[in-house]
Amino acid sequence: MRERALNRTLSNATVVTMFLLQSINLKLRPTLLDLKPGTRLVSNTFDMGDWMPDEKRVIGPAGCTNWCTAMLWIVPAHVQGTWATPQGLLRIRQSFQKITGTLGTVPVTGSVMADRVTFTAASTEFSGRVDGRVIHGSNWSATRIE
Image (cartoon, rainbow, N blue to C red; front, side, top):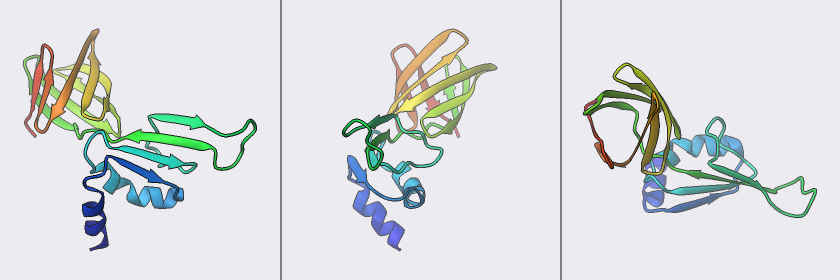
């Protein structure tokens, strides 16, 4: 019940600031990953385990050793799954903002930043915006089939 109330409370957030222990950040992580793609998460000092921040800065006076690390995560769109494209099936495995997979039989690697997906297959770079079950690129598109 508490988790559902937290989801409702955060559902319209565009920025979430935290100064929580890593153990609490890890408990909140599934809820945070379900926020709208592009939502910014900022934490002082404590990270989110294996979800690497998109930016990390040490701030404060020279030699600062306590409470001086600021981290930013941008919630990525959920793109894991199988997508139909004119170039063949795009199968994506997602680990937070990093993606791997195949386009047909060609390996792909790339990333997701908010609703923007970018990946390389062979020497061709693809980029587009995720809009629900469709990715729109300038000269390609993909439709989720799984």
